[in-house]
Length: 122
Image 1 (cartoon, one colour):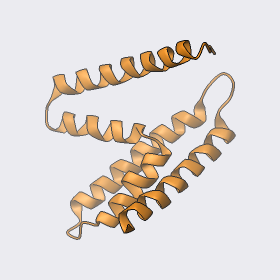
Image 2 (cartoon, one colour):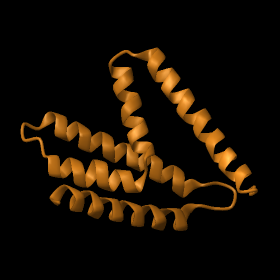
Image 3 (cartoon, helix red, strand yellow):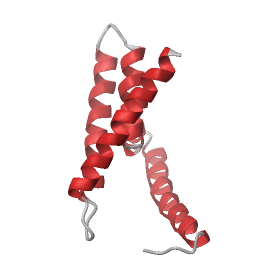
């Protein structure tokens, strides 16, 4: 139950902050707020993951609150970034390239298919 509450609290805070940043910085011509959220989420998840790896007192609570909760609610792009960097550090270059290209291309395709099914366009 504690784990659920930590993820719930972090996710709610991350989602609310994402909403505020997007409202402040997104324009009709450029989603600056979304880009800022994605980059900031990557920075946060990298910092916290690095901290958890370096410290001798690994905190599952901090992991749940910040990585799963806050970053998950703030942006899933941060998880994508962390996974890609892990592949690069493991020198799994082809895996990284495939993962990145497939995630981006299939993600865009899925958004397009969803919009097509709903008969909506931007």
